[in-house]
Length: 123
Image (cartoon, rainbow, N blue to C red):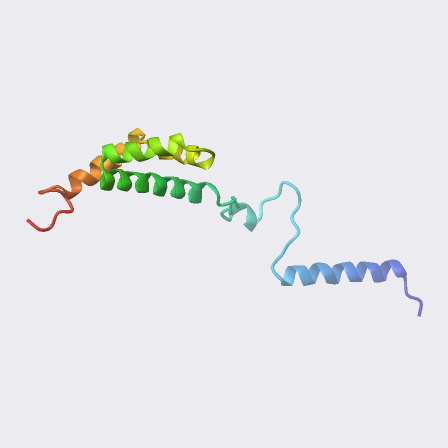
């Protein structure tokens, strides 16, 4: 018998479509609704904003804790020493300057640890 090459190609394509359907995939016409139209879409974002925000928040908390531990005078003297240095010392001095958020965190730690404060248990 003679085999039509176009018919063989057709059966191969039908087999591929049936195999794809068996695996759960489908072919959807443009503009038609399917199950995929109603499924929640997953947004793939590069996870960069949340970790950077966490690092910045941790940095301010650390600065506030150091400011509380050393006191304002000693802290400012050490930052001034860094600012008088060269290269990365000046950069460190710029980053470690007492900003309003650092002062607020330091004040919160002071009030929390003061007698009658939130974290003061002995009393």
